[in-house]
Length: 112
Ligand code: SF4
Image (tube, protein in one colour):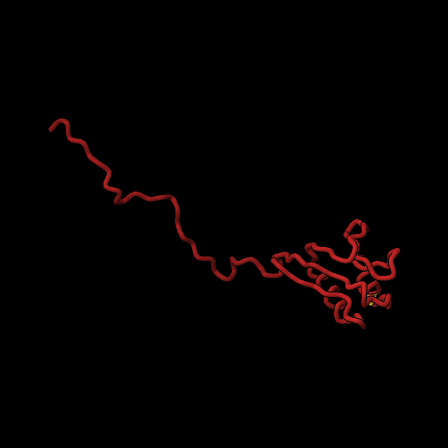
């Protein structure tokens, strides 16, 4: 037989996309996912007790103004609000600083 053309029906065609459900062993460790954190200082209530500086001197610094300022990893002042991705240890130190501030001048917000 001549002139017979086979037309693709779509059946048996693979798209190349396969679903693969991750097992718990394959899921990323939640501690390895870095969170963005915004730390804020309320200058109107900071009394320069410096508890925060004692806890995390790499983030809190007594600056020129009569309140604490935040500094980045290179030591440059970020003023009273700073957003960054802290390590697990840094996050714990920030939480400790928030809890130790006698006037509740430090606040922290997290977002992934
Ligand atoms: S602990 Fe609170 S009041 Fe004391 S310096 Fe730090 S932000 Fe200011």
